[in-house]
View 1 (cartoon, one colour):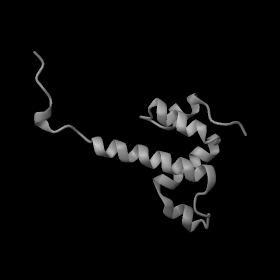
View 2 (cartoon, helix red, strand yellow):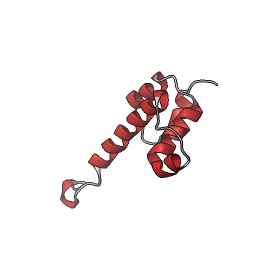
View 3 (tube, rainbow, N blue to C red):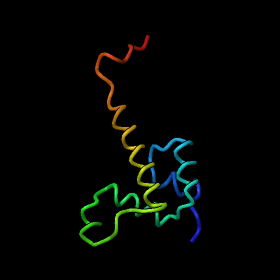
View 4 (cartoon, one colour):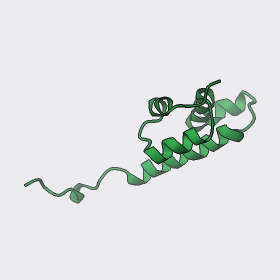
Amino acid sequence: MPHLSRDDVTKAVSGADDVTIAQIIGTGATVEELAEAQAWLANDEPMINDLRPLARGRVRELVDILSELEQDGDEEGPASPGSVSPVS
């Protein structure tokens, strides 16, 4: 199985910056492992109910990276109404 390319990551992970893309590629993971990590993040109950073992190895690394990316996106959130300066 081929390892992830930059194109694979940008297609699968929206909003990833260059550092995050490099971290994901640096795990040596495959497209299938990235998809599995995304499935764990989306909803772990079906994975557990399917008696799958908890994510380990490269999949676990990807889960950690992707969850950090999600947390960073959640912290930014929408701008408050008074925070945008008017255009002159």
